[in-house]
Length: 231
Image (cartoon, rainbow, N blue to C red; front, side, top):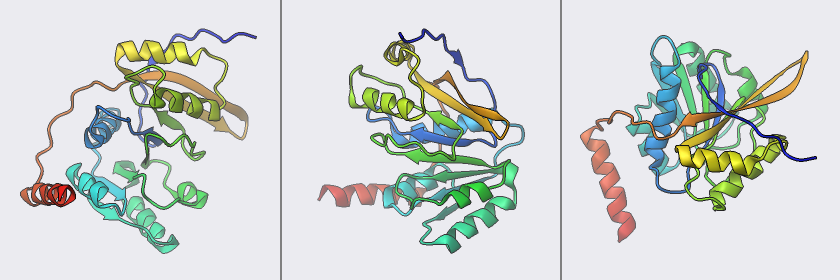
Protein backbone atom coordinates (compact mmCIF):
# COMPACT_ATOMS: atom_id res chain seq x y z
CA UNK A 1 0.00 0.00 0.00
CA UNK A 2 1.44 3.39 -1.00
CA UNK A 3 1.78 6.44 1.19
CA UNK A 4 -0.94 9.08 1.29
CA UNK A 5 -0.72 12.69 0.13
CA UNK A 6 -1.47 15.25 2.85
CA UNK A 7 -2.07 19.00 2.60
CA UNK A 8 -1.03 20.74 5.80
CA UNK A 9 -2.68 23.76 7.38
CA UNK A 10 -1.07 26.26 9.74
CA UNK A 11 -1.59 25.44 13.41
CA UNK A 12 -3.87 28.19 14.72
CA UNK A 13 -5.15 26.71 17.97
CA UNK A 14 -4.12 27.86 21.42
CA UNK A 15 -0.96 26.36 22.95
CA UNK A 16 -2.03 27.32 26.47
CA UNK A 17 -2.55 24.39 28.78
CA UNK A 18 -0.70 22.07 26.41
CA UNK A 19 2.14 19.66 27.07
CA UNK A 20 4.62 20.69 24.38
CA UNK A 21 7.76 18.84 23.32
CA UNK A 22 10.05 20.95 21.11
CA UNK A 23 13.27 19.78 19.49
CA UNK A 24 16.18 22.18 19.07
CA UNK A 25 17.51 22.84 15.55
CA UNK A 26 20.92 21.47 14.66
CA UNK A 27 22.40 24.70 13.33
CA UNK A 28 21.67 28.16 12.00
CA UNK A 29 19.37 29.16 14.87
CA UNK A 30 20.35 30.41 18.30
CA UNK A 31 18.69 28.14 20.94
CA UNK A 32 17.68 31.23 22.94
CA UNK A 33 15.88 32.75 19.95
CA UNK A 34 14.25 29.42 19.10
CA UNK A 35 12.90 28.98 22.64
CA UNK A 36 11.72 32.60 22.71
CA UNK A 37 9.91 31.99 19.42
CA UNK A 38 8.02 29.06 20.94
CA UNK A 39 7.20 31.12 24.04
CA UNK A 40 5.88 33.93 21.83
CA UNK A 41 3.60 31.40 20.10
CA UNK A 42 2.29 30.27 23.50
CA UNK A 43 1.76 33.87 24.62
CA UNK A 44 0.09 34.95 21.38
CA UNK A 45 -2.47 32.17 21.55
CA UNK A 46 -3.58 32.90 25.10
CA UNK A 47 -5.69 35.48 26.90
CA UNK A 48 -3.99 37.15 29.84
CA UNK A 49 -0.17 37.35 29.77
CA UNK A 50 2.01 34.64 31.25
CA UNK A 51 3.35 36.00 34.53
CA UNK A 52 5.55 33.12 35.69
CA UNK A 53 8.21 31.15 33.84
CA UNK A 54 9.73 28.24 35.77
CA UNK A 55 12.87 26.81 34.18
CA UNK A 56 14.22 23.39 35.13
CA UNK A 57 17.96 23.09 34.44
CA UNK A 58 21.32 22.77 36.15
CA UNK A 59 23.52 23.48 33.13
CA UNK A 60 25.49 26.76 33.22
CA UNK A 61 24.65 27.78 29.66
CA UNK A 62 20.99 26.83 29.98
CA UNK A 63 20.71 28.71 33.30
CA UNK A 64 22.00 31.88 31.61
CA UNK A 65 19.66 31.23 28.71
CA UNK A 66 16.76 30.80 31.16
CA UNK A 67 17.60 34.13 32.78
CA UNK A 68 17.82 35.84 29.39
CA UNK A 69 14.26 34.77 28.49
CA UNK A 70 12.94 36.17 31.76
CA UNK A 71 12.67 33.11 34.02
CA UNK A 72 11.05 33.91 37.37
CA UNK A 73 12.41 30.69 38.91
CA UNK A 74 15.33 28.46 37.91
CA UNK A 75 15.69 25.13 39.69
CA UNK A 76 17.88 22.05 39.26
CA UNK A 77 15.89 19.20 40.82
CA UNK A 78 17.82 16.41 42.50
CA UNK A 79 14.89 14.32 43.74
CA UNK A 80 11.11 14.17 44.05
CA UNK A 81 11.10 16.81 46.79
CA UNK A 82 12.49 19.34 44.33
CA UNK A 83 9.87 18.31 41.77
CA UNK A 84 7.22 18.95 44.43
CA UNK A 85 8.54 22.50 44.78
CA UNK A 86 7.99 23.02 41.05
CA UNK A 87 4.43 21.69 41.30
CA UNK A 88 3.69 23.92 44.29
CA UNK A 89 4.98 27.00 42.45
CA UNK A 90 2.95 26.07 39.37
CA UNK A 91 -0.26 25.61 41.36
CA UNK A 92 -0.09 29.20 42.66
CA UNK A 93 -1.16 30.60 39.26
CA UNK A 94 -1.41 27.67 36.84
CA UNK A 95 -3.13 29.44 33.94
CA UNK A 96 -0.41 32.11 33.92
CA UNK A 97 2.54 29.73 34.36
CA UNK A 98 4.91 28.24 31.81
CA UNK A 99 7.22 25.42 32.94
CA UNK A 100 10.27 24.84 30.72
CA UNK A 101 12.31 21.66 31.12
CA UNK A 102 15.71 21.91 29.44
CA UNK A 103 17.54 18.95 27.84
CA UNK A 104 19.95 18.47 30.74
CA UNK A 105 17.25 18.10 33.41
CA UNK A 106 16.68 14.78 35.14
CA UNK A 107 14.06 12.49 33.65
CA UNK A 108 10.82 13.39 35.38
CA UNK A 109 8.52 10.51 36.40
CA UNK A 110 5.06 10.25 34.81
CA UNK A 111 3.51 11.21 38.15
CA UNK A 112 5.13 14.65 37.86
CA UNK A 113 3.36 15.36 34.56
CA UNK A 114 0.09 13.84 35.79
CA UNK A 115 0.06 16.13 38.84
CA UNK A 116 0.79 19.27 36.87
CA UNK A 117 -2.32 21.53 36.74
CA UNK A 118 -4.27 21.03 33.52
CA UNK A 119 -4.39 24.76 32.72
CA UNK A 120 -0.64 25.29 33.16
CA UNK A 121 1.62 25.11 30.10
CA UNK A 122 4.58 22.73 29.87
CA UNK A 123 7.43 23.06 27.39
CA UNK A 124 9.95 20.21 27.26
CA UNK A 125 13.06 21.13 25.24
CA UNK A 126 14.91 18.18 23.71
CA UNK A 127 18.33 18.12 22.07
CA UNK A 128 18.45 18.22 18.27
CA UNK A 129 19.69 14.61 18.02
CA UNK A 130 17.13 13.23 20.49
CA UNK A 131 14.64 11.01 18.64
CA UNK A 132 12.75 9.85 21.73
CA UNK A 133 9.07 10.62 22.26
CA UNK A 134 7.67 11.82 25.58
CA UNK A 135 4.30 10.13 25.99
CA UNK A 136 3.06 12.79 28.42
CA UNK A 137 3.11 15.47 25.70
CA UNK A 138 0.30 16.24 23.28
CA UNK A 139 2.10 18.70 20.97
CA UNK A 140 5.42 18.04 19.18
CA UNK A 141 7.18 20.95 17.48
CA UNK A 142 9.89 20.14 14.95
CA UNK A 143 12.47 22.67 13.68
CA UNK A 144 12.79 23.87 10.11
CA UNK A 145 14.89 21.44 8.05
CA UNK A 146 17.56 23.40 6.18
CA UNK A 147 19.08 20.47 4.28
CA UNK A 148 17.31 17.42 2.87
CA UNK A 149 18.92 14.09 3.84
CA UNK A 150 20.61 15.82 6.78
CA UNK A 151 20.82 14.39 10.29
CA UNK A 152 17.97 16.72 11.28
CA UNK A 153 15.83 15.44 8.41
CA UNK A 154 16.32 11.79 9.40
CA UNK A 155 15.82 12.54 13.10
CA UNK A 156 12.41 14.05 12.36
CA UNK A 157 11.41 11.01 10.31
CA UNK A 158 12.36 8.70 13.21
CA UNK A 159 10.34 10.82 15.68
CA UNK A 160 7.29 10.71 13.41
CA UNK A 161 7.59 6.95 13.07
CA UNK A 162 7.83 6.68 16.87
CA UNK A 163 4.53 8.60 17.02
CA UNK A 164 3.02 6.00 14.71
CA UNK A 165 2.86 8.33 11.69
CA UNK A 166 3.86 6.21 8.71
CA UNK A 167 0.93 6.54 6.32
CA UNK A 168 2.08 9.75 4.63
CA UNK A 169 4.92 10.63 2.27
CA UNK A 170 6.88 12.33 5.04
CA UNK A 171 9.88 13.14 2.88
CA UNK A 172 7.63 15.09 0.52
CA UNK A 173 6.10 16.92 3.48
CA UNK A 174 9.51 17.92 4.85
CA UNK A 175 10.66 19.10 1.41
CA UNK A 176 7.61 21.35 1.11
CA UNK A 177 8.13 22.76 4.61
CA UNK A 178 11.79 23.38 3.84
CA UNK A 179 10.81 25.59 0.89
CA UNK A 180 8.27 27.43 3.06
CA UNK A 181 10.76 27.94 5.94
CA UNK A 182 8.30 26.25 8.27
CA UNK A 183 8.44 23.47 10.84
CA UNK A 184 6.24 20.43 11.33
CA UNK A 185 3.86 20.36 14.30
CA UNK A 186 2.08 17.22 15.49
CA UNK A 187 -0.86 17.12 17.89
CA UNK A 188 -1.89 13.97 19.75
CA UNK A 189 -5.48 13.38 20.87
CA UNK A 190 -6.52 10.53 23.12
CA UNK A 191 -9.09 9.79 25.80
CA UNK A 192 -10.75 6.90 27.56
CA UNK A 193 -13.50 6.87 24.91
CA UNK A 194 -11.43 7.73 21.83
CA UNK A 195 -8.56 5.96 20.14
CA UNK A 196 -5.23 7.78 19.93
CA UNK A 197 -5.18 10.13 16.95
CA UNK A 198 -2.45 12.36 15.50
CA UNK A 199 -2.79 15.42 13.27
CA UNK A 200 -0.08 17.21 11.27
CA UNK A 201 0.26 20.98 10.85
CA UNK A 202 2.95 23.53 10.01
CA UNK A 203 4.17 26.40 12.18
CA UNK A 204 6.13 29.52 11.30
CA UNK A 205 9.78 29.09 12.34
CA UNK A 206 10.96 32.28 10.61
CA UNK A 207 8.82 34.74 12.56
CA UNK A 208 10.71 37.72 13.95
CA UNK A 209 10.58 38.17 17.70
CA UNK A 210 11.31 41.35 19.68
CA UNK A 211 14.75 41.82 21.20
CA UNK A 212 15.15 41.12 24.92
CA UNK A 213 17.25 43.57 26.90
CA UNK A 214 19.46 41.57 29.20
CA UNK A 215 20.59 42.88 32.55
CA UNK A 216 24.26 44.06 32.50
CA UNK A 217 25.35 41.41 34.99
CA UNK A 218 23.94 38.64 32.80
CA UNK A 219 25.79 39.98 29.76
CA UNK A 220 28.98 40.04 31.86
CA UNK A 221 28.49 36.43 32.96
CA UNK A 222 27.96 35.24 29.39
CA UNK A 223 31.04 37.09 28.12
CA UNK A 224 33.14 35.76 31.00
CA UNK A 225 31.97 32.19 30.37
CA UNK A 226 32.78 32.45 26.67
CA UNK A 227 36.21 33.92 27.42
CA UNK A 228 37.03 31.08 29.83
CA UNK A 229 35.93 28.50 27.29
CA UNK A 230 38.26 29.92 24.64
CA UNK A 231 41.35 29.81 26.90
